[in-house]
Length: 353
Image (tube, rainbow, N blue to C red):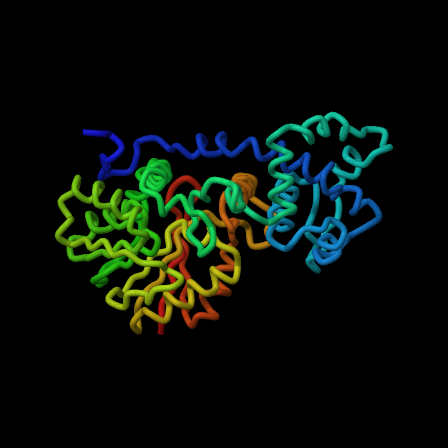
């Protein structure tokens, strides 16, 4: 039996969070070099604070890439977001990152500006497109959109990408199931549920619960393999569909969006939440499980680096609890509660009146 398909019932004895921080650590060098050399953020702010709109004009960056870049630079304590939403240099950046200063060290860090990784990331920022988004590139790993070559539509690549994501999910899912109260719920709809690992963990923890994993057909083949290793298959349905185009199943009183919103830009996140909220019955719950930025988008560092990673391979980024709460409220949901899980994750639970 392949260990890839073994789904532990209990949370891990040790916390793997630091491994993920190391894995995403390379983005620190690339983002600092991009901010300093390729988009000259520190020079733009040298004469005083600038609004986000001003910085978009001066850098040529659109809203999503600029947010990713400024969040990273704020997490490095090089720029500061003021109360009015504008940005200014930190004292450290003013002393050490402006050319001509007595303690300038920018030339040292600028050496990273021409590395392959930094040049590639700078191009992602300029184009506001993930790797694989051009017709001459291989498919984007985690996305499906009309006109884009998606790896999730090809059997071999869908299997590879889905199993790559399964390792993290196997660690986090038992913790989510342990801390998420689902008493009284009868069916959970796992939107874009991939391997179904989160649903399987919830079913194991809640003997009366039924689950629907809703995803692309090629991905559900892997979910079926995981499900066969459990004793809850009689309470699980694998349903093929497109979460943006097909009707959202209405036979669930809990909708789970686990690590989904961070793949998409703001308008798609708003649209998906509205679609899910409309499908819920009165008293139903919508759960967003993800890693979240600080509400002022100034970090924390681990989230800023994860956001940069997501930016480079998807159409999204990480979002703050405040941003998600706004979208949930606009969709008619309320009563937001937050519970932490593992690897910096948290679950936000909102209720439909």
